[in-house]
Image (cartoon, rainbow, N blue to C red):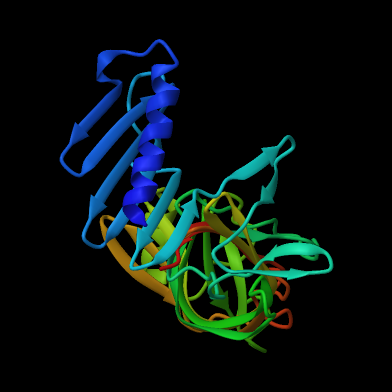
Length: 340
């Protein structure tokens, strides 16, 4: 049977080629292999004890041949199989139309994508710019000004798929993450002092070096001359966080690349928050008794393209304790990472 198929296909292609004005090297026969050039296509037929194999390749304007065939037919062990390259049509504005996937389902509305798997897209490792917003001005001491080198690094170590639909295109995810945040201030020192409240309680605030309109925080008495003489090189806040997001996740394909979007609340537990100053190449602790809120709630959005991730996070609760601090600020992050 396979010999008959080979001979018939060979004769048909030969007649088709000879009917056109072709070159002498249009047909190449090498043992059990036959290669035929037809316009911008190359047909390769090979025979073996296992069966007959037919591949059709595309030839570019430069004369190069695509590495992978766009049509392949096999006749092995009395089993005939055909594979074709799948294509995607993109309209303007970009609106992908999916032809078929390796796994698909058909219902009354037609063929729809069914993904092989559904996995959370939180970054396993990330780096982000860290900032603070001031949505409501309740104090007279100004908005904290941050340097451009304020940053956060972190990782969502373990990730879980809570549930998803049958097509694996929509579901709920969660994860457990850890992060380390640094906020570098411009001409300010974050600290605490009892002097403002007449010793009733310690108050956490940003001391503005230029204005000197409030008392200097506790813990910097030994560095007063360096601060007043302008020798201060850096002032920053550092803390750690454990994070627990719960997100709604959608995923789709753009061509052969999987994309996904997730968003939802994120619960955060902050700990080991400390403020520092630095000058003469040395770092000094200002306060490790800052009046911060250890528990916070954020809004988290994540967009992934294959393994690359872009995310944004904004706090929904204040970073500092409003009863012991006039700094009504929300933490904000925007960063990139990778999900392996």
